[in-house]
Image (tube, rainbow, N blue to C red; front, side, top):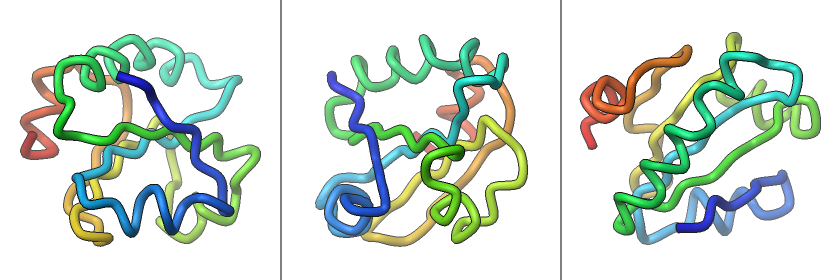
Length: 103
């Protein structure tokens, strides 16, 4: 499954107005834990077609990171019906991510 890159221009449509739950990965290119987490995020995207998976580069979209109080990366936020449903911080195994987010 494809992972959608989110910007402030498409955030409303792709995340807040999505009919599916949306998992958003807040990351940065210089973040080693983010790079370590990337294959896990891809696996989740591949295994869960009922979930839309997106990435937001915090260096390029600082205002979105601020809007959702992203203080540490990687941060994963699950949106359901345009609302924050759950969030995790840091690199963790796939099963723990799914458990923490209620997937």
